[in-house]
View 1: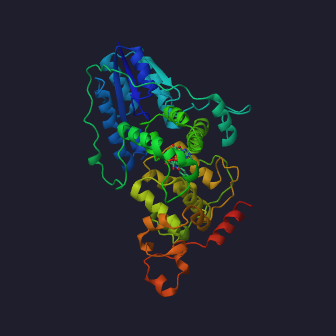
View 2: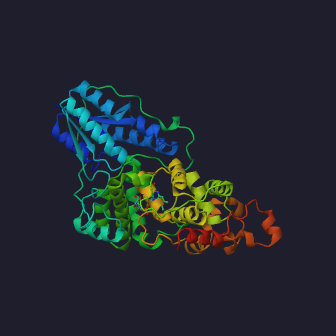
View 3: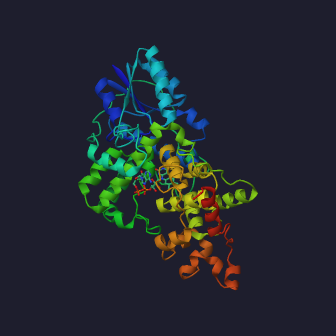
Length: 454
Ligand code: FAD
């Protein structure tokens, strides 16, 4: 008998319920990945993610080969390609991770229907992408939690499933696959995009558990210290399982591990919001009656924000980190998102789209719902708070090291002046190739609060 294990956002062999179930169901398994045309059409395969994906597929293939198998890659519509493989191999079951986004849920439905015609069953597995499946815990009134704290309480009580080991062997039937996607063939990739794939992910995880996690609670907001795990791209592509991470961090124990697990629960939280409200990927989760600022001045300021030339050094440092690495520190994401949506009062979708064009970890649940959180149209219980970039810089980059690292024009500015170069004495100020602020912080804040009626 033959079963298909359809890989989506779960590109790993460790704790892989989809592969595990397929192996139990049949003598032979086709580990299949479809480079989905729909994702390509939606512009979702930005170069940084495509490059990282190439590594992920190569690493998954290597993991399967170590076990006597291999990865079969196809390109096209997922439903068509899976049906073809089913016909070619006579598979009687297809296993896949349960979808969370509207796109994945729709694809799952179409696949189920198409497979029925082929007398082939579809099994969608929970808790493959997230630690707790969306909908597992719900409030007394409603289909999802709209506030994190009560969600987290229930999340902790519920507990995540046990992690599965990697399979010993995988027997793959004869079936055609394509030449693998190669990272070297992808143009326009940011220079600092890390190596993708399960092997790199597990190395990073081991190092993180050995040394980084203990101090995470105290240091995670330190912009220059770079003291977070940087596991997000690996979680996005499923090179690591959130379930395994929760258990391994839990075994480590301590305040740092607790704080880290809480962040993993944030990831689950956003996924359960999106699963319940798929439209929140591009529509306001909570409509605040915003009439976002538009026009030539806003366009110019937004472009300066994209380029890292707003004249606010900590904002610019963050935006340049994004462009260079395809990643940005969480504290920096928060402050640049507040700057765009509140100080400039530009539509959060503009920012979310720019992030999705560059982030290696860019995903609908985390990106869109964090953007909405920052814009006050999402699940933040204080939707009108405005982060002041100067206060943020003083608190989270007190020595200015983050700014000097990413804004070389300011590398020689000493002391706290690095956060306010416009205050430097004139000859020194004029010598810097660095713009004046694109907006007055107090005026931006006032305009936003007036618009919100706050
Ligand atoms: P760590 O601090 O080590 O946290 C561990 C893991 O917890 C992360 O890898 C991530 O999976 C999860 N996590 C941490 N914080 C959050 C959070 N606020 N929401 C959801 N999950 C979280 N994260 C993404 O994975 N993809 C995105 O597209 C994304 N876009 C964002 C956009 C904005 C405007 C903001 C404010 C945040 C966004 N985040 C996104 C959340 C967060 O910034 C990143 O997950 C985090 O910076 C990744 O770095 P890390 O792996 O070192 O995180």
